[in-house]
Image 1 (spheres, rainbow, N blue to C red):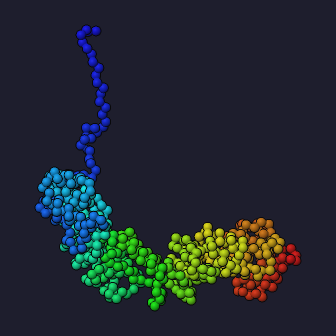
Image 2: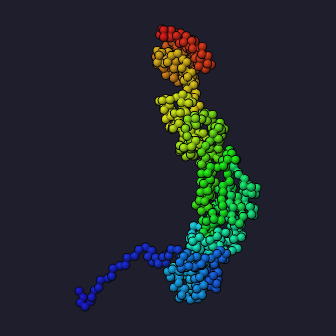
Image 3: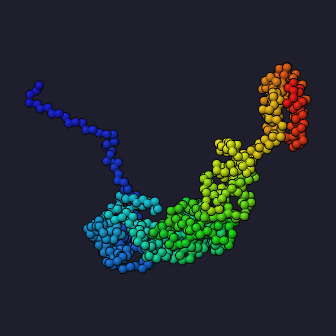
Length: 575
């Protein structure tokens, strides 16, 4: 140990994490970015103009301005104009502007203006804030003070015909209107009267391509359609703007817009969702077959107006409007038959059924359902069936199969009873089987009809299998199977018989001339016995063909005689 030397403990090593040395470089403030030269030039130009004339962002005043009263309502534009002159006189006073841009109360537009003027005086354009809006897009601006971002964006971008409207959102909420386009910016007070030229400009720059001037129309329409309010099969949207401009937009044009039509127009006014105040809208359509001299149901017209108002408020996509307008009308009809876009009167049931896409069997099944109804029903595209209080039958699909799929669980028993006289357990088994199998209803009904017809024919035979002894029962079963499914289906069955059935199987193959490759399957004794039975079995099959295929009802006695003959040859005796 060395005396006089003091040993001190080393400080603990500093804990470091990967990337610590670059952390400071990576820190960013959300919503702020470094301004490009192009953005700096644009903001510098606009701010210099604003500093020279603080009122340059203001709209042209064409509407009436109310008075400022301490005892009643206050006109927002009057308040803005009164304070604007004060802010303008202080535009070079940084200290005053800094206080005003953070002051509570006062006009919010002038508060934002104070911050913009201070930004112009400071001249630091290297870093900007980013304003993001789903309707107005992204914009760069210099944020100063507590004024609303949208107000500062609009003031600093006053040359942008859309962004400058953002300054006046609070005024618009109080019931005042602003209209902006590339040739002007106008305040109309509480009157939603667009200035001259504004309507044509916004329509020419909307998301829909128009032809015409005072009367405009899209592809799918012509001037005469719009001028004379003609109805079309697909329907079209009629808009009539204040000032006399009339517009027709086809359903196909609405379905193809990349940007909402109402948005492309509303973005040029404030408030943007009050298009219903500057134009009226109507859907020019009625169902095919609806009488021209009959008015549409009042409920339908009310629903239609609600749909159009929703669209004008930018709360409904363009491609959904046509379908919703048609549904508003179709779903209000209380009588007759509605299928897709067509209507048939109560007496036009045959024309209605003919209009459907499907086989005669499927249409007959639907007819059974219609005849059983006490009130109406609505079959939707998704397979939901709705009972209606009124007598109207409404089908959203014109194809019989999906209609019957929807109706089958509730009306299958009625269809089977009316078409085939099936009921009880027999009908229930078929209903369940079809629900699981989901066979096409045309084929299903034809097959069921054929099978029932065969069963009815087979009832002509004088015996059932259970009433006959072996091997006569086997012969009878081969006859029945040949009638039901064809002779070919009986060959495998004939091969598998045992004992006397084996001999009868050989006799059957001889009668049907199907023995070429099957002799080795039968022993000699069976072939000998079966060979002796061939004449009687041939007589049995011939009489079956006469009775069951050629509908010779007198042949039942021949069948009975042939079976007795076969019984005697087989050694069974009388039956």
